Image (cartoon, rainbow, N blue to C red; front, side, top):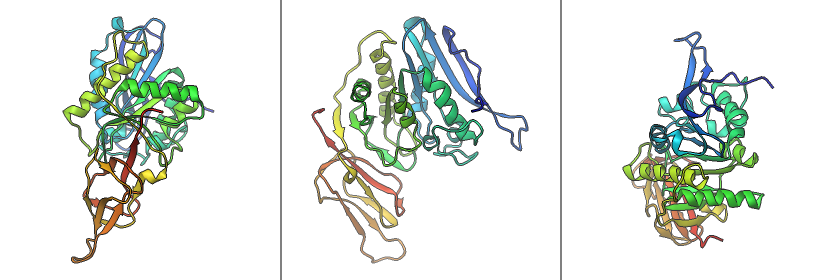
Length: 332
């Protein structure tokens, strides 16, 4: 396979603090020999574990970029042992355009792994992470939120894995992040995800969903900032103790955790995020909008649980994820 066309303006083996870019050649109408310049920071001091922190995997999710652009200004080489690689906005073209997917090629970075060095712009970004950045890392954290179309209770997440030891490491990192909720997340489809790429390499990986709606709040940014520092302490890269707040442990035991819309129309939530729900309870209504006087479709929970995620915009389409439920657990 050919080498990646992306070149880094930082030296990953050099001690100290380096702020630079991943330069991806991109010829276009307004710049024949142009490049996509993706910000990256490397902080290194001696030998030790490597943490790879990312945000902006989807360009309309801002808690990660806000927290990571802040973290790169705060970290000092003299206070760490090991290495921290930070990419605040992985899919930089999508981030600049405030879109989930890239305006260059329509690529959803979190569905295109392992990528291709000779593919589209987004595939080239995925390939660089797959073959260059992920192999360097011991601990990987990708900070997500719901973007413009989803909203979640603020949670850190790990996945069920075939390797019990790896799953235990990921779970411990999730709990060290210490978001208000800690969720063993069931994905709708994990093919092509950054998560899957990291986990298949045996990495300790966690992600988050820290709200949504295409904006941020002070509370959610504070959760991200605290959680990222907690991870560095947990990994032994930063000294100190993990800052603890109460976190509700959640699990997703099956596909009944998801409700998908089978109608298009005006969404009326009937319970709010974080509230308990019983099997059969009304979760939402979808009102027809083609004419007045028509009966709304009702969507009821298939299981007991907590409303953990929901569709955010007022209008919903057929096939959209309407709600996500999870079950409180004692940690087993």
